[in-house]
Image (tube, rainbow, N blue to C red; front, top):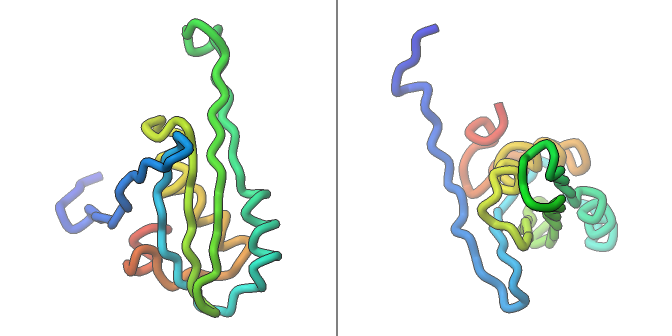
Length: 128
């Protein structure tokens, strides 16, 4: 398969923010093609999207087992717009980074409906 520069997609990944409680987060702006449910329903769905990654010391040859948690907060801004935050204590782990830019948009679409854009960029730039 041949590749050329036209196949490269550059996406607007938000800067990592350091929070006061020692956690870090990236904040994404999602726009939907439909109306979002009320905030209390959104909060319940956000809790179900939390992701835990477990790394075994035997498998990864590390001194001890490690568990990394990525919490998801979703704030309804308008009928069709939400702020999505991915919070973690381990910001540079690739599993958390990939969750935010690859897995999470698909999971959010499953729960809330089709996305119009993420970070002001067309859905197709993020979800292929």
